[in-house]
Image (cartoon, rainbow over all chains, first blue to last red; front, side, top):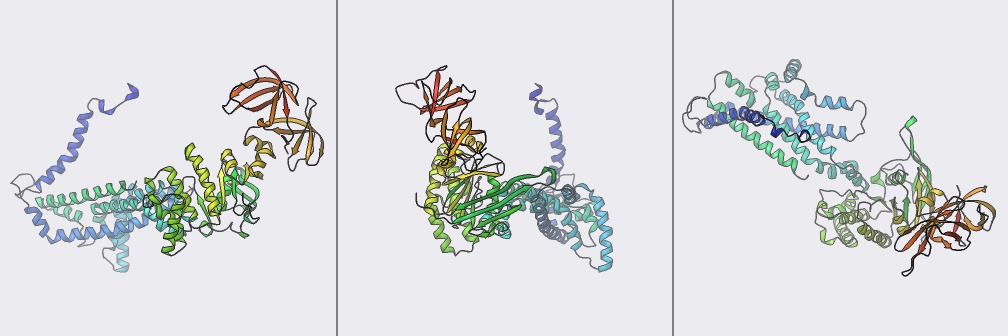
Length: 266
Length: 364
């Protein structure tokens, strides 16, 4: 039976799997449920109500933070995807050479260096620039988000490029397409699902970030996650649950879209 | 066959292509020269790794020669990028653009050349008709069969009216019957368009049936260039005779030369007349090649004698393997008739007569 080893038939497997799912999903289910609580508590049920959604919707701080999150996320995702596309082209459309592995590592650095280290480093670095330039806008946050989003955008794009038939580009060149036209008419359209997937992944990662944002933001630059963190410090109301639930729905929607886009045209 | 004009479409002059450097250096092409005439169906034939695809890639511009010139109607194109050469390629994998329709694929080259829309449309329609694909113009290339993809690849490469069409083993992915059909189709297209075709293959039968002229390649060199008839009946070297068709190789002494013919004397003492490969240097022991169907088996005395070792029936003909008294092996191919057997049996003592104009003296 050794050759037919199947994890499904090991004793305890079902119990372990069930425990994992419960630990993972039960808190989320509870959180979502209490978003609809009519009472002021996150632990005692007081009937069904949408009042916390209403209250969050009318809270200008929440709206501000949400819009700021979207703004940073959108700009950072677009920039990160552009850089990631260029990086992916440069690292796949070449014969392997010594130093290529180092470049992969450099591009993927944000996946390996602890976020807190990057956060502290950026805090010190940006504060110097602030003193010299006097600029204290959203640029710092956008730059930081762009940097840590690049590897997330890079991976699906590189995956797509590695699966692409290089003969197609050769065929385009053979049919009188200049390198730029070959890129526009052949490479880019075929790469597009990878680019969209990278863009959405980068956007979700940016929306979700707390650690680096917390260090880099100036006063009045709360994003939705850092705003929520601040609120929790002052005691939790179901309003946080309502915001979390809306946030969860948005993320699920984007990830689902990502899934369909990356499957399309394969 | 119509007369081929004597203009050269492509001249390859002393071209070398060396991959790697230092110790690991490999010459994929070693000082190759060849001229390809206008309107010709020219085949580069050889085993894999002989350099035929490398030569095609150099003409297409996907790679650049280490040394030498490639002239297209007298102009050196070797340093030009592929999109500046009026030469198109049919790829082994077809390389159709999967995100475009059949019609868009065919029109791509013309669009890149900046032709007006109306002209592109007319030309695409013409090409669709030429390869009989009108009904599938709007299909994605992933929605058509392998044979249809092959036709689209041909139409796409022919649409910009290239000066030369390069075909890189385009039939190798097709099954036997479709391959036969496409061979005839390719000849028809070449005839109708009047474009010079350079065809790469490792299939000797394909080369013999389709080509006006063939270049046989091995280890980065061109061994012989000639018509299919030349290559088959007058091979210059042992490799050529061995690679194309079946051959009997015999050692003989050259005892006289004259009038383009040699007198070859075998160890048995028998002497026959043989044609001589160009570039033959007189020497004591030359190799003589005789095709199995150009020799006749007799019960009596022939030019050679031996014992029947094996008889293999092939339907249209029978191969009779003879162990010669000189120790060499010899195969005779004999046409079958319906009623009788081949007339010989294993262990028979037989003679082999080699007709006039059946033997060729090789240069190596």
